[in-house]
Image (cartoon, rainbow over all chains, first blue to last red; front, side, top):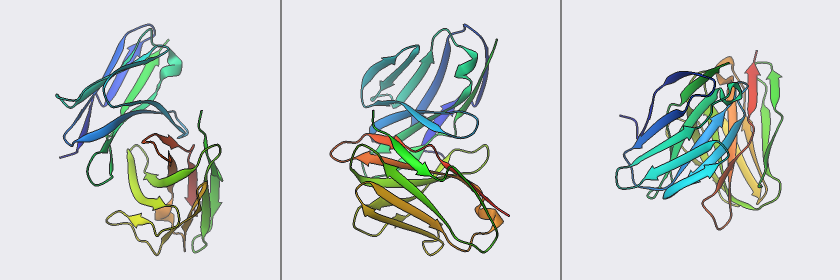
Length: 109
Length: 115
């Protein structure tokens, strides 16, 4: 069983749609990261969360520590949002980073 | 914001040669750097944790004699793939943790192709 589970694995949306990607984890964490990886491989760190909610432009990330769950929302999606989105958690024991398998998002014009 | 660079971004080498990949934190001191590997269509796999001035800690299944990691300064870590083989072809990504924080910054990655 993976320590970090993401859903859905693949997502296709029409431009303008509201998108939600979910992440559940089973370990105690000190921080959760949402990462974006475009074709070609470069990774961008979108958010680092330890509680509550963060917003950056059209992106919103929330985390519920009690439920061990985080969501990444994209409002008014655009084709340039097409990428793989990865949830990763930094455990608070053992100094270890666990990765989800990623959600591949395709936004169609 | 904090920036982490990797060099080279792409490298093609012959089987049996060694390849060095550099990871630099450009505007902060990184007490800890991580090296990851990503196979096609898969998520990142942590290879090793590198702390400045000490030996790297390798994850289970990662050959430390094959993947040599050096973290000689607070802004530079290197990964050397020794005697590379085609199965070492992969995307290698580093990240750096800013000293005194939990914030981790990712490098853009290096695509290694071993012929």
